[in-house]
Image 1 (cartoon, helix red, strand yellow):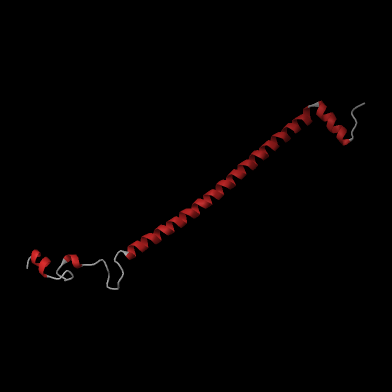
Image 2 (tube, one colour; image 1 turned 90 degrees about the horizontal axis):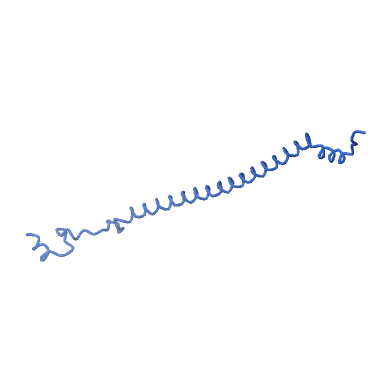
Amino acid sequence: MNKVGNIYWNKPGAKSDPRSRKAVKKDGQPRWAAPVAAGVLSLMICLTINYRAYSDLQKETAQKQALIEQIDSVKNENLDLQEDIYKLKRDPKTIKLEAKKLGLRGPR
């Protein structure tokens, strides 16, 4: 029989009909279920890993910013101390003020 005869004379579910193949396995699950499940699982794993990496990046960025601020603060304090040292070595007014604080008398 030719194709036309198969279409009209055979039952729609007959094995000779190529359209009768269903997208269902013998155990009742659709053929696309396993690949879709694997894809969804892979996507979930990728999202979890990327979210964790993103949150770690955010923490490290905050730590870096805190350290930068701390470094700036220490640098400013260091400059103030260097200025005080310079004044104590060379400025007579500052030397007299510090001597008075310590209870020392100037030369007579």
